[in-house]
Length: 513
View 1 (cartoon, rainbow, N blue to C red):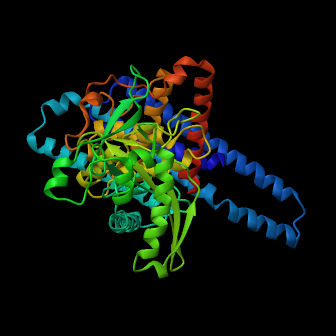
View 2: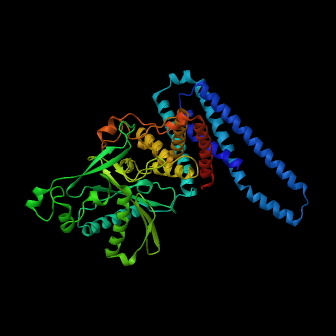
View 3: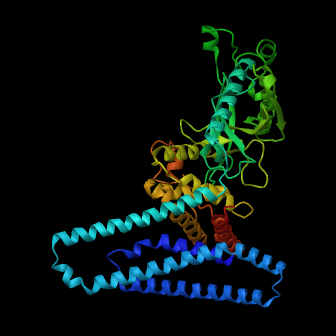
């Protein structure tokens, strides 16, 4: 364990500090290289002494056939040691060669000033070769991670597309089933969450989330209101439902009675109840009533769909969304339909998901940036060059944080900030370790400063393709780590969990799982 961790540390240091062999090497940089070379040499000596001591202890035992077999087995177990030892020796020799070369260049600097242009071209050619060798080494290291890290074996793109197609098919059938104005209009869905963003860390327990926008039925209008006026940030809303006059449409088209200007008895006889009478509590759209009605609607639609005999539908308990398991041809998928009301023509919705409070009233709809986040990752993936590892970095870190106090939302926010400030060319797979180090450093800095800004609140660097409401664009940055600033004990615990996260990530890079 110690030997393997040391090798990982050496590899990281080599890649993270490969720039020290440039022509602008100062005294401090040379001292650091000399110190690193001595440190590696001491560690190499210690490991060799440790192995020699173990060998002497084994030779002192009785050399029976059983003992010889034990020694042979022990020697085979130490193949990793010899490989790592050889690697350490090569690294030490490489560092020493770099130091010797730079000293020689510094000593002959006056002669180089008067050298010919052909000599300078020769030096540039050598430097290019050296950079090529480093690049090849980085590629070899990346190839090792690709082969040995246990990435989820899944085709997320195809599965997510199938889920969206299935839910949209439900919506089309629901439009035929619903013949009155007692339920909101269902619009085509959006894929949201880690699976649709392309980085789901766990292939065994994926929940494919989709957000289905709700529109007001004929004769109704939706009016969002803040639950607590003056709340900062504005995240919890209620949706007031009001009736609209449809007398003109009734006269021109017919078939639809105006809810405002006809008595309830006539409406119930010819048209049915309004949305206010079925799914509202008071004047506000009720999340739980709407989700319960959607459960019934999904079951009815599944019965009517042409391929229903090939699928088995199991409804799962959930009070604020519609969650079910669809099984077909020995394949299963858990799907969760989240309801949302769009804010204007933006990518921000008021969703049926519960808020962060201990208790969320059934008339509360929470601000959701899930569609905007999925759109951001779609744009990033589309613009990233071939070989980009930005989703793999997020995926690996997300797997490491399972069981810690950090949420995937926190990690995703960190990666989104880095993707928005680091050139996409820098996320190539040959720079995999560099970007992992950036993620950990950024998170550590945020914990130390007790501040991590929400990605969409008051962020002026949002891609122009993502449409935000004016209020969100003008909002002050919202600190997701505000609770750490208010509770020193919480910050100390978060730092402890961060160290645990780093250890987990190191083990995953070392052993692949």
